[in-house]
Amino acid sequence: MKMVFLGPPGAGKGTMAVRVAEEAGIPHISTGDIFRFNIKNQTELGTRVKAILDSGELVPDSLTIELVQDRISKDDAQSGFILDGFPRTIPQADALSSMTTLDRVINFELNDEEVVRRLSGRRVHPGSGRTYHVLFSPPRVEGKDDATGEDLVQREDDKEDAIKNRLRVYREQTEPLIQYYRSRDMLVDLDSSPAPDTVYAALKALLNL
Ligand code: ADP
Ligand code: ADP
Image (cartoon, rainbow, N blue to C red):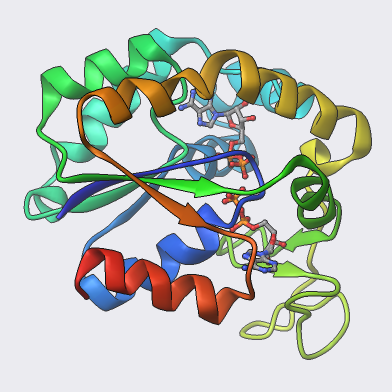
């Protein structure tokens, strides 16, 4: 199944994508993770996009589209994939529709207050991308990754000023995609406010997993 997880930052797309990808045996493709991997490894792409990610603005469409085109043409993505964080603009959605046919777009719904609560408590393990929350899904040992014991960090863009900017960017550039996909009869809404296991159960039911 080829699907897109759409929704505001912090709605839980990544958390659910990891679980669905494992259950369905398809890759989880997160453009944010790909950019962060490149920043961490100081590649040319990483150097180009670091300041953009830190501020919460969007990476230019042309660059992002090329990256996704390349990724979904790989062998492991032929029978399905979860795109998490892409598309984020109408031009990206148009480009995606010329690359492939999607089965489903899941719209993760969460209000701004809860978005801020989730993002400000988010902690990540940079090596793996594993995500925790200081209150809602804390690691076994404070500040340490469960699997490796390595330090968890707070993303630069999960600090207050960048969070506000990202919500504004989401409203202006990404939210119009809800209507874009709804009018094409591809969108399914998902209430993302309950606890993770409840959201996951609802998502599995939607996807017939
Ligand atoms: P979130 O956890 O807020 O959903 P992501 O990890 O998806 O954030 O994205 C982090 C940052 O990476 C974005 O704020 C943006 O700078 C960049 N980015 C990720 N995906 C895209 C995209 N499809 N188009 C442009 N920029 C993107
Ligand atoms: P996104 O990929 O949409 O930006 P994440 O999956 O990274 O969002 O989740 C944002 C934060 O909220 C993380 O700290 C995560 O642990 C936490 N979280 C995810 N889903 C839930 C949920 N259903 N209830 C409470 N917290 C959640």
